[in-house]
Image 1 (tube, rainbow, N blue to C red):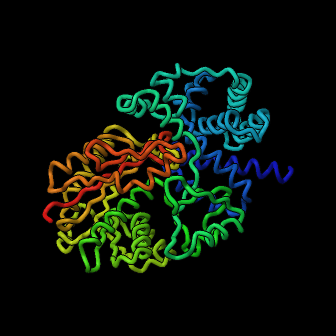
Image 2 (tube, rainbow, N blue to C red):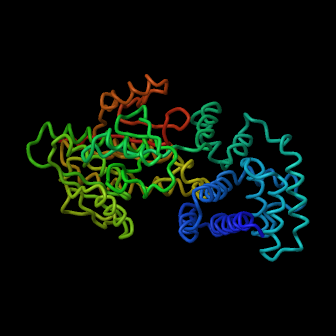
Length: 476
């Protein structure tokens, strides 16, 4: 057997195992994929790209793939054996979304894999379904495009999410959001300009074959293309860049602006507390900014487990930010030592994560309406504890990476009504970012009617879905 053919079978067999872990055993996609790539360290760049796209793409388009398979199979997808179901899904994904392999070869490889997994008796069934779909792929039918079902199938997003967004944003805007979340998001990094100049950073990336372009929202953000292994980049190893989507960078920018505002009224060293910090992006961003601006500040970054705390420590070491101290702490547990002590408190809280579905494509299948309500309640429980850490005149930044009024706008309103916290007008703080967005033809970063909240929407803004609001504690 030719070596290339054998490797192709190996790639598909490995992809099948990941799909079974994710779609049948409910493992997190990024964790299962990372383990498999580590186990198959011999894959070259092209093979890693094929393997990653096949697994992630099949997961991302799963609802659409199931809808198509059900039209051409005598056995409903839900009644198939898990192995056969996954082989069909990954093969249909190749037929519809990957042009590198001829249709006949896709069908043949699926049959071989069916036999290899011990289902020789079903090879005719697999071959028949796939060849029918291959012959009809230019004439596939979907529910009407402007219906909730049509949007759900075409974007491979659960119907309840589509209906919820339609009720808030309308059909046209929901379609924009879903389209953006179904596309591939670029790799965004924040430059550590407290450590190195932009020219040196971009030159280093260019030397290693990476194309880096500035993001229109921020002069400190770069969009990277042609990255194979991030950890192999000297700019990453030297602590000059940190992976952080522009939406999270915008929230970090607001936290840094809050720190600057606090510094105007104080001469002593400031204190910043990040209560759900892992992997530490916002604390690191603000610490870099404080160092660059000459603002004396100490940062405490906390999270629930030692594993998450170690993620923060690892990034602190790489970025050489000794002013960031890491602790394991349950945000639901009051810490009397921090009461009325934080000049800036960052509360980027657990959420449904629907704003980052383009990056974690299995989130949408795990989330339910009930789970969303439970997360909104958890946020309130955490906020009812941590707001007490903010000193009078200090700032609280509340953020999530989701698109859901129950977790976002409603909890912001609840904070305002329950505690001595006043909304902070952030339009001025966003001035530079808003101007650069409009110059690039992007939607402005407009705030809500209270002036203290911003909801970023994929397809409308050049970012993930993200929500942020800022408050100042009354009393000074």
